[in-house]
Length: 374
Ligand SMILES: *Cc1c(COP(=O)(O)O)cnc(C)c1O
Image (cartoon, protein in one colour):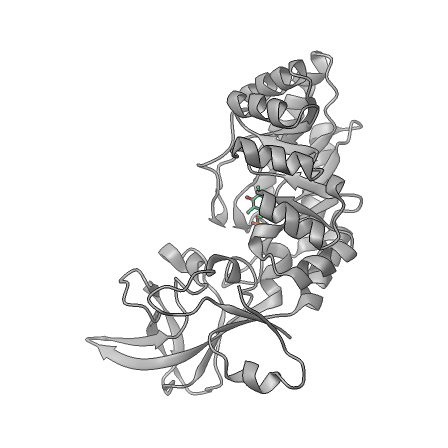
């Protein structure tokens, strides 16, 4: 990942650089502050995979966030940004044994698991660690569901946490993720209630779970409506109260998109405007393989901006490579100005998450996406 800092002498160079991700670290810190205010007392573990840009990590850590990490490299990035090892949460439920050991050596103490075999692995690799069991969610209500790959049934969570305790680990509590860009705060209701039941069963077995990790999923400002972060805090706080009563757990959040999404603008340039039959196609110098991977299946629909003001026409957007998958929006075309022309900028708003991190290798001779701090 190339990073340019837009100092006075480099602004000229940066302004012609296309495509680029313009990243506003201050905006990410403001979003973090908003999350902290919405969830008073909760531990915020920024999901590094959303955007691992070092200056961003440093600013978030300085503002009180820990990090949600999935690999030794992410642990290294978080520590280099100043994070305390105790403020790191290893949330990858399936990991290489040697990677778990390295994370343990680097000081990570809390690991998410969702299977009996991974509990044994953690017990071997990081003796005495704390584990959280990840339970399944439906993913309904989210634009980018994550539910199929990870998560176990609640009864299984009770069993694996009990087994963890027998292996000398600390059965810390429960974790889940309701799917990314989750537009419905009530999506947290079922997993919070399920987690409370798991806590109850564990207590009945003499264990002392304390941590409720409610994952990420908080939205950025993509196309379509979503509640404010304050509403999420209010509603989810109420759900925790209903399910847990006086035995309120320590809340952990793992926001990625909700913090860094709105902090970035992906700036692309029109290469060509082509009429193909009935449809206008606009080919850009950024596509699925240069940062816009979340447009696959048109899951994430970014808000778009250009400098033209004329009437709009439905437009298919495509990327620069020869791969036929490098088409952004075709099923539901986007409305872009009629007079859009070669050389014009098309700006993808709220594109700070899951863009620069996915384009570290150039494809078809097109450079990976460059980040410019603005
Ligand atoms: C990706 C991921 C996150 C961040 O999700 P967002 O929807 O970007 O907030 C949090 N936790 C886990 C385990 C993840 O895999």
